[in-house]
Image (cartoon, rainbow, N blue to C red; front, side, top):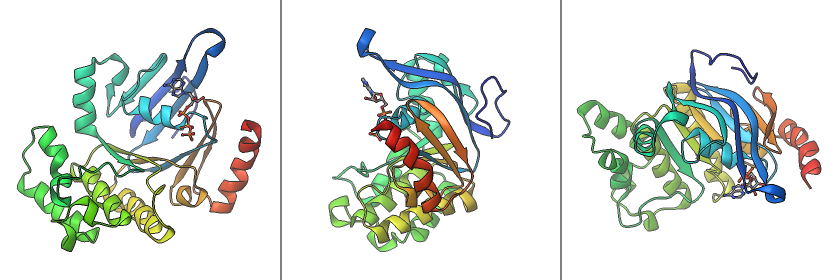
Length: 257
Ligand SMILES: Nc1ncnc2c1ncn2[C@@H]1O[C@H](COP(=O)(O)OP(=O)(O)OP(=O)(O)O)[C@@H](O)[C@H]1O
């Protein structure tokens, strides 16, 4: 793991940013959402991306996933130079290598839980093989969705909907899952369940997860905590308690106010 500019990409990196900047606007309205950020996200890690509002967390996630262009610098995703691919190639790479979990769950309301989980395969025009089906059955069981699998999102609780979204993200075993405030809409019990699931996915299945969060409790489930302030990477820590994370953030929150 490294956050040092100029260093070579580590062999186990799934996502690598090298001196990535992303600016919006022109002249006096110019905002550097990301300012020369270099970081590797290694295989099998559960990384929390934290920082005050406007510090660049969503921008980091969007450029790392190829949803947004960089202004300068390089992004490697699953060994491919994202910054050099055209839109079609980038979309394909994203479909093959990236899973997403959002605060708003983003499930298709007219589809059942099962159909939502299988949707990425359908969109990518991929068949679900026997081994994949066993994996999906295992996920559905482990995530406690067995009895709810034929239900539509509106018939599920928030926590159950987020578990469907996590099953959908895990189903194709993507190189990396980006989770954007995945517990933002959940009560504390459902949040704990979802965060435990994400941690288990990293520890037991070797699933790489990068999670944007404001919440020190959520970030305490991660094994690495990156801190952004004003578009720069200002902290790179191992696992910390919620209190330690709050203490860490206080200086930056005050600075950003
Ligand atoms: N499309 C855009 N056009 C102009 N400015 C933008 C755009 N997207 C982001 N910004 C600016 O870039 C900076 C970083 O935004 P970003 O959304 O990445 O921050 P964030 O840390 O995710 O914030 P939050 O925690 O509030 O979601 C902010 O100053 C924001 O106003």
